[in-house]
Image (cartoon, rainbow, N blue to C red; front, top):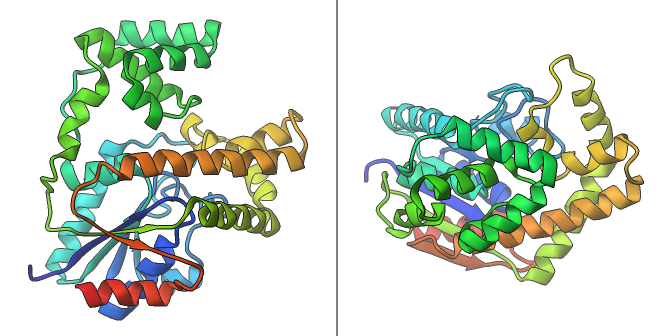
Length: 306
């Protein structure tokens, strides 16, 4: 392999971004972000984007590439990421991909699964049922027909719930069965994959610290500013953990303290779903981190393994 291709995955607040930054500096590489929300411009605090200073020191790709009002898909991400990879390979630059959005990681390393096409009538009916019965009812149905997918799909993620039920109605098979090739370990590129993990207790502490930092940095003001933009937020962006809860606060549905606590709870739930996803990944070199595992030390361990 003439050019190193490294992928660092981990749950939210695991420290993968800092480790990727330090590693990129050590090997003279560039960072490919694998994050479904960092793609949005002006969604900075709630997505924990790298600082402007870090982005000046190390080139980051697929951050700030679309407007918050635009929808964004795993297919579009893979298309854009493949172009970045081609460009960096031609430049013979080491590639450090890092992120925690499991479906985007799967799409990047193994491609998009070949499931059935969309059926407008089924989709419209399911969306209508969600409006009448509530999205919770659709998620309960998903639990019955595809418990594997229901573990990975958030109860508020209407787009993915509807798609999973649509696939089941079209084929009689759960969408997770079409995604079974994701466990094949047959990767599209010569990735060396590192995984960062922490104990649940330590991870929860880091999540709480991150949420407090986001509030202190002005997350409420950031969300308010985004909502005041002429085009507003896409449903996808508005459902992001951290943003959805602050929107509820701004709409008077709960106090700020309640919203902050809800962000912590939903972030922990997100981390749990990520852990479930990552257990199915093949060929991951896992590092168990503790409080003494600084970004520099973690990066050095990965470089030494290379």
